[in-house]
Length: 227
Image (tube, rainbow, N blue to C red; front, side):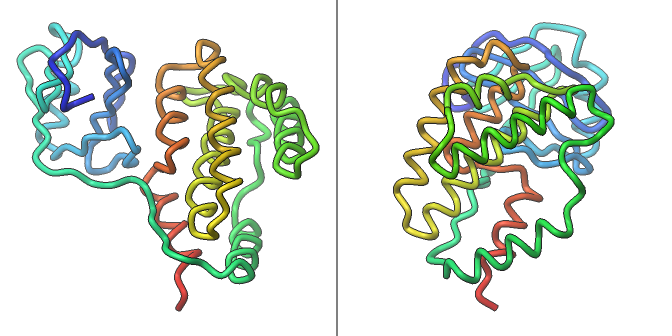
């Protein structure tokens, strides 16, 4: 998206730690040093991010030619980072045990405060059936896309996490069937992308190639560490 020619874009969200712009081909998150590093993020210095927030809505927005422009502000990519955790070969027994241990430390999902909590649990169970090889993939995905509150609804977060997990751990376990399932899920997510937010749809595209938010990438590496 950044390497391509400059193209018109639109501001779709401005917050103290992140500003989101959408162009044909995807979304770019302009993130402050305190923000979560998304797989579609450009991480800015504090001064640059303050300037972006101040001028976000003051003029035309463009993405391309290696930069993002918001009115008079130009943010140029200086170096690149890879949001896909590449784990190498992982022992299946070690991975299984650590995933169980990690899950025990995580908060419950979904958040009971989410108005769609009941439907999210139903969708989670349907997706678990798909992973077990006995569920309706198309129906499970359709019922989760756009489900929940927020800029990235919880249903989309779950789908993105599952796709990325299938790719990242499927590669580490040398399980091509896992990557195939992630590809099938992506096709269904894309077919229903209009039902969710542009940011959630873009993050799903990244997840389908194994790209995660930085804390999740760090967690995958820690789980797979042989030490």
